[in-house]
Length: 317
Image (cartoon, rainbow, N blue to C red; front, side):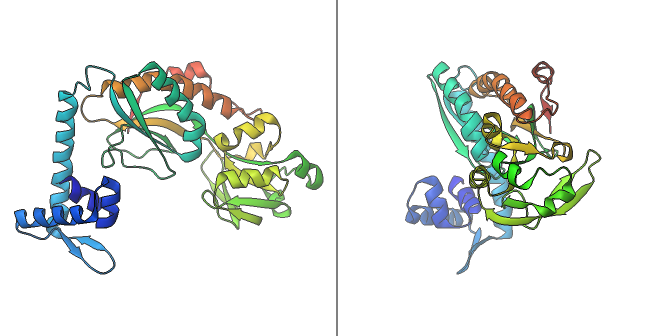
């Protein structure tokens, strides 16, 4: 069942083998054995991709429920609810994870020698249940789901440039001023020909920009801005160090869209393992303090008081 679910998730036998750390021949044999045992075909193979049959789709849903029950039984048997021990799987955005989750995780490992951490950094939203992730740092509004969310702060999209660039080309004071400026676009966040802003009422406005440089990572956009190539727009935590150092300056603060929440999320079903609860208890305070500092980086914008943040309770989404 686990091999079949991995094939469905990965989209191919070879990718499933890599994810599971087993040879392709083993994956192929286990799928064939499963289909022979059930007496039906679960996957239709073509030259380009694998497609679940109707029976395969129904069986996959049952497999996920059964595998989760097996995991739960193993957690109970191994004492996961009685002691802070075992492997903790965390997920976070790449830059935020490296800058903020990793230091918190390192301190947690020092305090809990019986816990090992697997930190998965990536800029896509993982499915916690299907990908067996214990806890994730999620940035953005959360849809209704069976996840529990603990707010740890907020993140903003900010426009910034180097002092040298602003000295040469002037400081923009309105969104219309962007048309006369050189811009650096991060295509993971914005389109190259227009940046989207939103007011407090949620009304969106696409502002045309001239992108002299388009890059595929936030780090490259920030480095280009540090070189004085133009204005760039990234997330507040990605540029906080440069803003604090004064090597970049935040502009158009009054036109920034409302901040989006940052939350620690975890599945809401069943009991919470001790390792997960211990990490939440250890991480929430430091993450809230870090994000409270980021919210004021480089500008006199309002910050969420840490004390008020601590009074917030977990929200089920």
